[in-house]
Image 1 (tube, protein in one colour):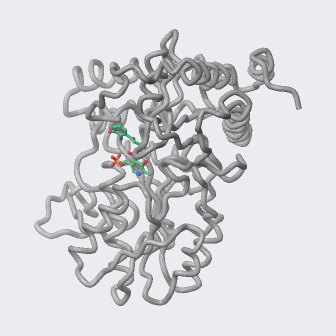
Image 2 (cartoon, helix red, strand yellow):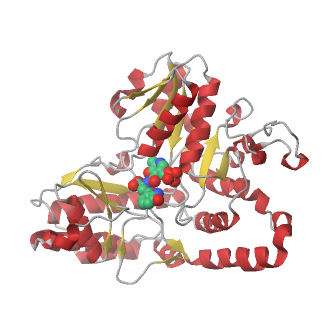
Image 3 (cartoon, protein in one colour):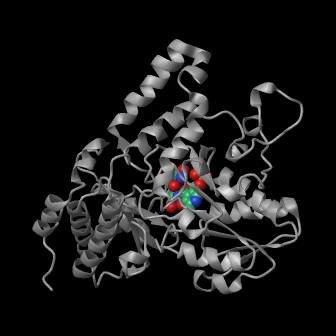
Length: 412
Ligand SMILES: Cc1ncc(COP(=O)(O)O)c(C=O)c1O
Ligand SMILES: Nc1c(O)cccc1C(=O)C[C@H](N)C(=O)O
């Protein structure tokens, strides 16, 4: 097989039916942005959308905005727009709070549904907030243990003591994608519930929550959904569970009749019971603009492009960066991973910084991973080619050894 040249990557971009979607985003000149899996790019429509909410709606209509612009309906409205991306019904998805807070509500809700069971199963190396929040909920309920099993053996570890299986569908470092349907089936066979963290999946890979029989899910708004830094998150509760499950953050917005101002909490009939407080309208306006970018996208084509981008990266790394000490830390088969790919390297941190200094933005994940995320809505095949070419230069010329690249910021 011939080595891939830049012209080949350009040809892939010319043949890409989704190429025009890139124009919907603000992507600074001279920057190769391969970190949309951590913070998605700014859609061109967002500034106006936010400006409209601030100046025309809040500024002019003040409190009337809640009804006049249906601010109060934002959690359901954006949830319904996310639903097709994750194989859910419109009334099964709600936008609210952060992913961590939504994990708390759903983990607690799951434990309330399985009061006689004492185990939450997850995998070691799951995204920390998932494990930390599970610990917090377990401590509150008491008598609950968190058992960690490698993903390959998790299905066998499920038994009659398992209340909840808590997993991230696409792993935040390795990008490994788990078999949602098989694990959910194994959990249900033992009477356990499953909660999927879709933070690195939504908008990047096909997700079929209902087809898989999934019970519960959460996900971030600021990654592939392009909702902006700290954007509100979403949660999913399968229709069949919505009237049974309760959650402990029983704020007034989850009340059956918030504006009746009753003294006692009565949960809303269905999914709205997962709301807690007032929606963050400005943040939601940005997220709504981000999610709207998917409206007329051919999703199977988008997901195929994501796989092709990550496959190109892995191939180019083999062709141009073999011998520099990188080890693929993601599944080799694009069908088994999300849209990001990680490589282990002893000097991953300074290498990442040296790349950033050249305008190639990937990220470092402790202790030793260099991670590149390809957002199929706006990443070009040529970006992947150019990023690997820069990496080859950084390694060949040992540019990463400069002392300034060793300095660590608070956020890596
Ligand atoms: C799998 C996963 N879950 C959750 C989060 C974040 O949760 P939060 O937005 O609450 O910080 C991230 C990324 O930060 C993540 O990768
Ligand atoms: N949420 C983040 C933040 O507030 C600062 C820096 C990065 C993040 C992230 O989203 C990290 C991301 N979940 C990850 O997979 O590493």
